[in-house]
Length: 352
Image 1 (cartoon, rainbow, N blue to C red):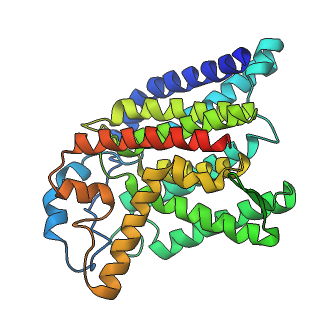
Image 2 (cartoon, one colour; image 1 turned 90 degrees about the horizontal axis):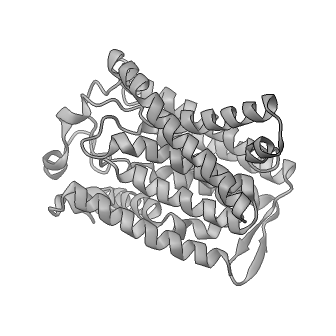
C-alpha cells in the first residue's frame, strides 16, 4: 500500500508543478492571441431575444470579454505531459522504480488518456470558434445540436469499445449486485456521458468548476485505489494535481476560464473512469454538485418552455444563489464543502 501511495504522490506532484510551470508561457500565448470572447453570452434558459434583468445584474460582461477562456488546456496538457515524462523516464532509465511509476497501461489508462486528448481538442475547437468565428452559425461555438451530436458520437464510440473490446455489458448496483444490460449497455453509456457533459454549465464562477472537479477526481483516485486499480488511481490523482495547478490561477480574480476544452475533456474522462471502476450509479453521489447544476438548468428550460414560468431566479443553480445575494466566494466555498461531503459518502458506498 505504501508503494502504491508513493506511486500516486510523485506523478501528482509532477502534474501540479508542471501545470504551474507552463502557465506563464501559456498565459502570454492567451493574451498575445486575445483568446477571449468577442461578444457576451445570453442566458440560455430564457428566450434568445430577451435578456433577463436578473441575469444582467449578476453577469460581468466586461470581465468575460477580457479574460482568456481556454485555461482548461493547462489541465490536459499537464496530465498528458506528466504521463509522457514518466513514460520516457521509464524507457530511457529503466529500473524497478521508474517502471513502477509509469502509469500508462493498456487495460486501465490508455483509453482515459486518449479520450481526454480527443475530447479536450474538440472542446478547444469549440472555444476557438467562439473566439474567432464571425457573427453567424458558429459565433457561439458549435451550435447546441452539433455539440450534442458530437458528445453522443463520443458516447457511441465509447459504448461500443466497452461492449465489444472490453467485454463489459453490466453495471454494479451497490448492495444489490450486478445488473446485466446486454447491448443496452451502449445507449446507457451514451446517456451517462451526455448527462455528465451537461453538467459543464457549472463553469460559471471563478474557482467553482476547478474546485469541484478536483474533489471529484480525488475521490475517484481513492475509489480506484481501494479497488486495486492502481494505474487508474494514479491517473485520477494526476488529473487532480493538474486541476489544482489550474485552480491556482483561476481563483478570484480569475486569470483565465476553464472553457469547453477543460470541461469537455474532464466530463468525458470522468464518465469513462466511472465505468472502468464500475461505479456509474454512484456518480450522481460522488459528483453531486455537477448533477444538481445540470438538473437545475434542465428544470428551468422545461418550466420556461411548457409553463412560461421560472423555477429559479437564474439557472444554473449557482447563479440562482448569486441572484439571492450570495457572494461568489460564499457560493464557491459552499460548493466545495458539499463536494467533499458527497465525495466521502460516495467512497464509503463504493465499499458496499
